[in-house]
Length: 73
Image (cartoon, rainbow, N blue to C red):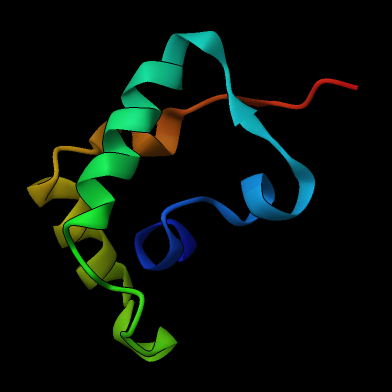
């Protein structure tokens, strides 16, 4: 939900996590697709599991759940 609403994950915003190199390009492409959705004005209760899955399927982001994240310390 956070990604669809704000264009980044919660962990990315608050802790600086980034996708591993394997997923970095796909993730940046997903961020570009997300911008076109204009979902930032939607209330949180709009984002049911079904709505999230539908958006991810429409945008062909099914790999999103598999992304590995890293944080350089």
